[in-house]
Length: 193
Image (cartoon, rainbow, N blue to C red; front, side, top):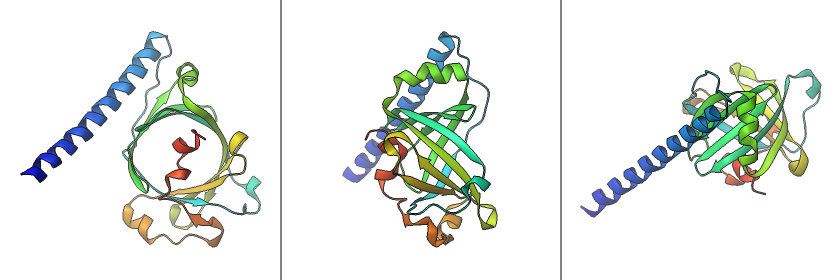
């Protein structure tokens, strides 16, 4: 009976966390609308399944690959609520807890909404260049070269369609150490350093 009550309490706690997150997102949206910074229409991404690597040496010929300039800040780190500028694209993202697989919801923002929310971030703004390197099997290595306070850091992520795909993936040697399960390399944590 005690186990059942503990299980119900944990489910209720998780539900309250998600309700609070929805409330925070709705409040942010309302704040943007109130200030005339309308959020653009867009979609959701339900699950993020990825591996993350600490890259010791950059691959040759990076200039041959598409590069995106990214800056992102965190309005909250638990749960993660992030705002991001990716070249000329702006979005707000909610991420659940997790390392290799977690829920992720992305919603587009206008430029005005992004800059309205930017002063509200906790911690430091993360700045990086992301190189999109094609891999076999239709996968893409997203190589992040950090700038500013984190200029010494190079991370690489590969997103997968399924958990089966992520579990059978064999990375090239140049990827370096797999840090997927280390919270020290989550961008939300890096923003607090």
